[in-house]
Length: 305
Ligand code: GUN
Figure 1 (cartoon, rainbow, N blue to C red):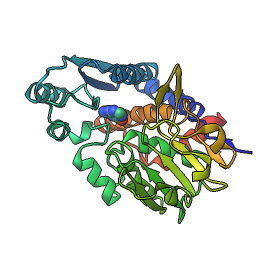
Figure 2: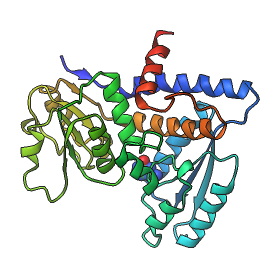
Figure 3: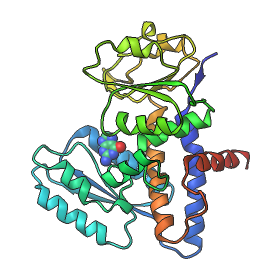
Figure 4: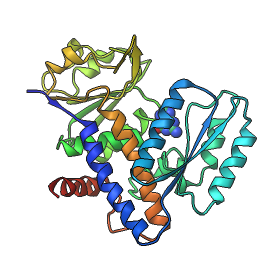
């Protein structure tokens, strides 16, 4: 029997836990946590992602401030907004939706965000913490969501072969570091990898993050593999992942669905990062509060309630 790694159910449970925590802060008379979301231009997919993130924040009591800038915004204009948001006491987290229009220098923008408000975990200071295994940094949302999902389903990673297809800045690269924390042997495949199948067939855990619909087929995986599908593509009127779900499911011991797998966990991880920033700013940081394992444990407790 193949286990479906249900990111939607885990997210619902985690978010309920978070909602209650935020409610507690409000009843103490504290201000709500706040996330500033910056969207530049009119990319339809980015609009949908940003709107989902905002709605999810609002549902758990996190205030969401939306800054929509025109497509022709300059780097300087965006840097000015970020400086304002960095200085604003009541803003806990800043998210600049990527990709940015090509005239904007993305590196400069990411560097400008206060690392303590960098809830995406993209600032080099947070990426550096990930390299150094300093657990007090912000971990990028999709890698954190995948880690929580695997932990929840007790997928053992120690000494296992984790193969990641897609070496992007948002998912593949930071996930490879996080999987090293979990003591896996990590292979990171990308567009120039000579023979991807050679890697995918040896994976105990296979993560695909390419955005190429149906890239991973049954002959590319071994029996018993755990499959994590990060891809989101629209094919006709259907949303599909990188993995040919129906055929790969037959060989997998566990697999994430699309939708309802990694997507909700990414948004939940953003909420967790905003809460982490807020707790720290408000002096509410508990012992080991932010280590993903501790969150997974809290979540299990929440299930029992
Ligand atoms: N674009 C696609 N994924 C992400 C993400 O996790 N954060 C931001 N800021 N932009 C994205």
